[in-house]
Amino acid sequence: MTGIAGRDLYDDPRFFEGYRRLRTSGTALNDAIEVPAMARLLPPVAGLSVVDLGCGTGALARRLADEGAADVLAVDASERMLVSAEKHPRVRYLRADLETLTLPPGCADLVVSSLALHYVADYPALIRSVAGWLRPGGGFLFSQEHPICTARRPMTGWLETGNGTVWPVDDYAAEGPRTQNWIVEGVMKHHRRTATLINALLGAGLELTGIDEPGPALDSPELAEHLRRPPILLLAAVRPP
Image (cartoon, rainbow, N blue to C red; front, top):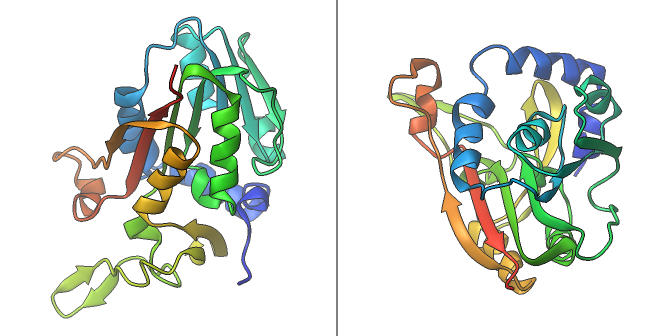
């Protein structure tokens, strides 16, 4: 299957400009849905060493630093994203592909990732790496597109019917790459069942501590369609002491 892989997507100038406009439009999922959900599942971060995978322009990394994290290593494959990132005295930015990223064992108290892991082809391998980077008792929290949203091949989004629109859930058990026309044509993501996502955490020796499928507030008409099916999945886990 051909498409624009996640490691290249955000350096595509057409996509980057469209994404920038989306984030300022008030209709993106990030600020209204994903950020509050992440905040609910995050542990206290004061004094922690944090790794942020797929940091984008560093918004989450800077929030964690402002909340007292001792240091944050913010990693992203996109040069455009990192050039746009605001500096922070306790945030260090690193350009690297998440699938080949190498960090010292036991270097982190907390690993986080915001809406990036659906771009990763070898999710189990990355989870095993995360488990190795965590110190005993360290936590892992990530968000990604909900498997209900990534299931259909190709990812068509809402479909018109005689009675309105429906979100098709098809090909759910057939895991693998998907393409989607989102801002540009042929964006590649990877679909996995919720069970696969959770079992990879357990298989890497982590313990599941939280799960969420957040939606928008009831008084957010511009995001009302996201009340009809969960747009995002969040999973939290810990490396046992």
